[in-house]
Amino acid sequence: MLSGALKRFVLDNPHASADTKKATQRAVDLFLQAFGDAPVSIIGGEKAGAFRDLLFSLPASLGKRKSSLTLEEEAQRAREEGLSTLSGKSVKNHMMRLSALWNQLHQRELVTRNPWTGWNFENGQKTIRRSWTTKELALLASASWHSTSVPEETFRLVTLIAAYSGMRLGEICTLRKEDIQTVDGIPCFLIRPHTETGWAPKTEAGNRIVPVHSKLIEAGVLMLTETTEGPHLIPGLETSKQGIRGAALGRAFSLLKTRIGLPAEITFHSFRHTVSTQLRNADANIREVWIDRLLGHEATHKSQGTTTYLTGISTTNLQQTVEAISYPETAFANQMI
Image 1 (cartoon, one colour):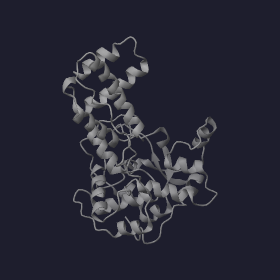
Image 2 (cartoon, one colour):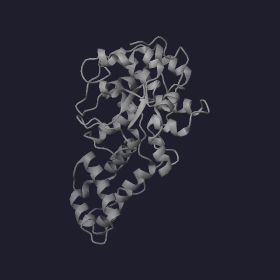
Image 3 (cartoon, rainbow, N blue to C red):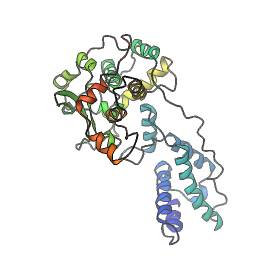
Image 4 (cartoon, rainbow, N blue to C red):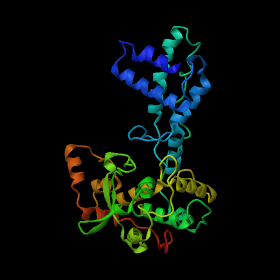
């Protein structure tokens, strides 16, 4: 069995380094999660290829936070939310660890060949996501909504918040009423861990405050704390069996973009790209570190000084940054809650 081969030839090998043991364990664990344990003699090119393809579809953040999702569900989440996926280098590293194990098995004639060699790690199917164009936003705004699992009002609300904040889909859908607070006299979204469900921002930098854009205030977002039933801010969303709130919205958005002819480069995550691009091309008084802090990015220039400064950016500066986000009237015309 693969698990037994890992223990015998890697974990119990006194000559294997700690790094080798850890990295091989990780590669084998991913394979076992995907396909289960099996005799090494029946694992061939078909399974190796399927594992390679699965690795390329997994989110780059995999393993950086606790998750109850299966690998297929992680891949689906990455597709629906437009998340960055594992690089060719990461996929190659996992495959090479398995190849090194198989070399030992082949040498001992426990397998007849090594199915983990000879693969191409240039993922030609990888799509480079980009920002929305004005025409595409107008197309989205005018599109009819066909989903029966998510109300149209909920879809319009979530896209409006994404467009005027740059927040991720998961961050928006999991907002609780208590996550709207006044900070230094400014209404803000608080992106922070939820101890009751185990949800947390995808990175440490993701813990942040995002001032509520004036357009969102005009649309009535602050009133949701009084009108929405239950603890969450966004109405009309269910939590999936895997504990993901808004999974159905992600699937519905994917179906909508395909139906109206939006290209593969446009995903829900494109709202973050759009906000980031706008702000970096906006008024020169907006500093790069303010943008990083608003979007929950790691500091562009990492240093102790920069890290300390990021945590000390004033709410007023963040408000100035978020208010620089703007769209033509046709993009989100008359979207009120």
